[in-house]
Length: 564
Image 1 (cartoon, one colour):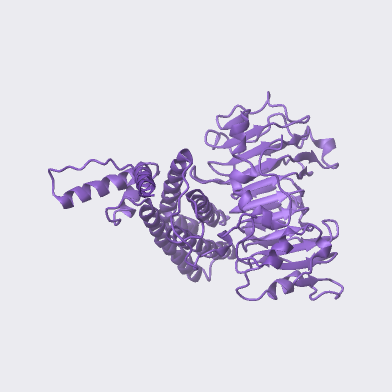
Image 2 (cartoon, helix red, strand yellow):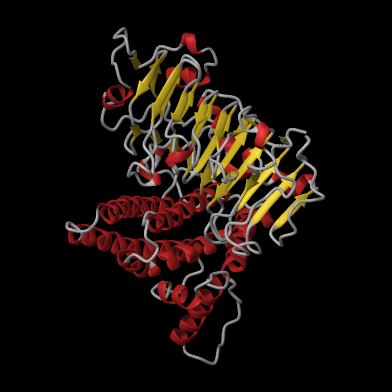
């Protein structure tokens, strides 16, 4: 037994040495304190090696005492980021007060910044807590959570700046300058975590970095072997495993005719008890619900289902043209983690002339949609942040109609390209990965990409593409899907000239159909036709969004790997 303990301890020390790049050489000629300073400096330099802002990184980790525990460096990096994010939040708060007499557009943008940066601070607090104490018992799971949260923080920072309509806005410049430290530190923290992930993966390492303290920041992370949170009671587990919706007894029923508990979805959501950990089940009966619905951050593990996507419809028409920022134009928004929807429709009827007009905005982590219809024109589905999954859905639109910076897989779904205004074009995706360290991306797997009947007569003049790069490291993957000839042979469209063409990551793998030929595709450095099955697997449900850890608890079917 003792020999096993010694070997285990030696292996752990060896791995830690690899992770932080410590060379176990002691300069015996110097003083003990001098040796400690030298070793600590080397550790910090090695930890900061994969980052883009090394000087900032070394300064942020300078307070870490001499240690060979990588956890201490990760915690210090996240803590420094959190403090900088708080300063950015305070700046947005100050600017909101100062802009009382400014134009409404600027005021709305700053208020959105304030909310987004508050979200960023919360995500960083969750990240910090998960390193110090967690219910996750393997390092690979811990790393996946950190990558998810830190990637979302970067998304929030970028979205804040995107809210300003005037690119030359003085307030936008002030916010951008005020977020430099937070942005650089977030990038560095994510780079450090990614480097740690590679070491763990290459060694096949799984070891406990902490124990359950009973005070986990996000208890949803405690998942059992069956894919359901360990704190679910037996009845709740049976509910989430149910495939026949008619057998479910909901917590609340919504019906326009008054036959339910409430007449609006919003009223049903407001009935959820404070601190409810769920699942809270809401049945929305057949009807057209003309309301703007928000499942806020405090409403976690909500399961909402309807009578079918042609019968239960949530509709709205807010748009950029009518004075709403893209983020605020959504008919339905899901912010509370663990949200699941089945057999419903979400639509924005502003039309192509409304410009940006979101039908569904999803910011919730571990959000899933099954048998849903999501209809709009420009910017229909905003997959804003975190991990998301869609299956057996229909999604329609024109320009950039699936966009955002989530880690998102859309599987077994129909993607419908609609007729835009004359002299416009169509792009299915506009993915928003802003820095290379983010683990985000948009994957369409085993989908069918078709044109609506109104578009087909004009498909050779109103051209349609698989996507265009919204941000510098945009990542979109179309795999094992049927692509019809509504898609132009080029496949992809630039955003603006040569912008991002070398840094984007656009991938096609195993597609079929009249529009799937790749011989005439764009010749950009960032575009790739993938042929290796093992390489393609990284973008499937389980490795890309850790689907096996949570999708069993969503009351829906999914395929964790490649389909063929």
